[in-house]
Length: 183
Image (cartoon, rainbow, N blue to C red; front, side):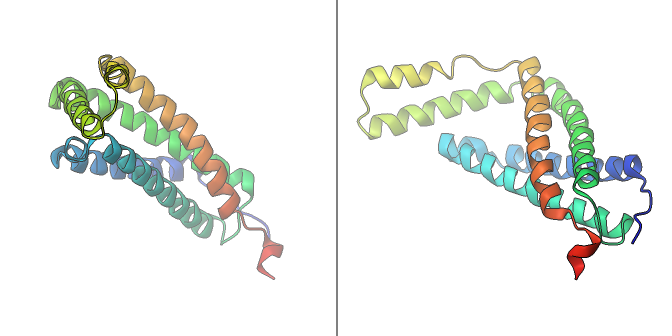
């Protein structure tokens, strides 16, 4: 079966917008619900893992949908990878704009307040476990360097592009399907 040409750019733009909207929705729920503040440092790690899993599942569903819709169920690894990577790039660009708006206008003190809360929860946890004062001080020093908007945006770009590339490789390996694979 011959693969037809696909509207790669249009599809990746559309799915990239959807992926960004899903990420923004999750971020708003986390922020509005005060989940990071209430869960502490270990909870923020759990939220990070859950967000990563959601990103992976969303990208896999989008790539398989693209494969089935545009390629009649068959797609090469390279086509699947290009699509998923472009979706990641589009989503990252939108998330950079969102993060700039959020941290500049909506909640400019969010990160500072979050760091203060996480620092306090970490201190309470470490003291309750009898951790030596030197170790507590060393750990709490990490909270003193509150990220600026520029650092936050740089982190969004790096995690979006590097994480997106890694997820895209894995998703492409799973979603690829050759014509002979169906027999």
